[in-house]
Structure formats: structure tokens, C-alpha cells
Length: 73
Image 1: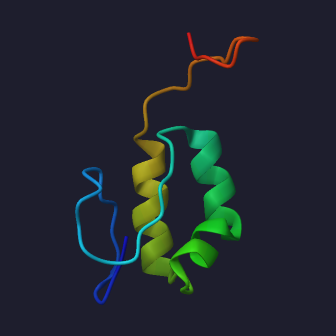
Image 2 (image 1 turned 180 degrees about the vertical axis):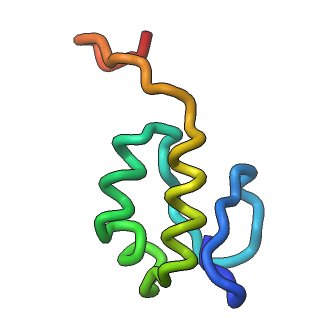
């Protein structure tokens, strides 16, 4: 979520502001932090923003392998 104070993770999806949806998967966050998230939020991520987002990403639950049918578990 892009706010006037900077970037913030909104796990509820209800905060007002420019947002982008990311799965709770480390692989999605890694891709997003390489540039897609900044583009979706129409902003430059500051070093502070990146620190907040990397910290959140590091606390995500471990990924479950995806089976051939496309479902986790």
C-alpha cells in the first residue's frame, strides 16, 4: 500500500491508498521487489520502504510445493 508516509503492508486489503495484491509466497515477493511492485504502486521504493517489505517477506510462512494440478500441498 502506498501512503503519503511511505509503503505499508496491508494484510486486510481495506486501507485507503494505492495498493497491489501479492500472494503470501516468498517467490511472489522476490519478483515484486525486483521492480514490479514499484511499477504497480506508481512510485520509487525508498531504502526504508524496501527494508519494511524485505522484513515482511522474511516472515512469510514457508512455501508449500505446487503439485501438477496447480494446488499447494
